[in-house]
Amino acid sequence: MLHIITDSTSDITQAQAEREDLIVVPLHNLFGVEEYLDGVTISTEEFYQRL
Image (spheres, rainbow, N blue to C red):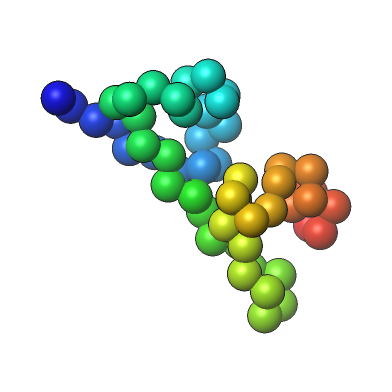
């Protein structure tokens, strides 16, 4: 089986992300010394608030 690999900045929808052949790798976000994983330890809304 072939797989598609993309990062979390591709704005893949939740429905698309649940496909078995799609792997979404979370982007690392740094705010000072704090590190977050996009969509895992920080939501899109929280990211834009901090930005």
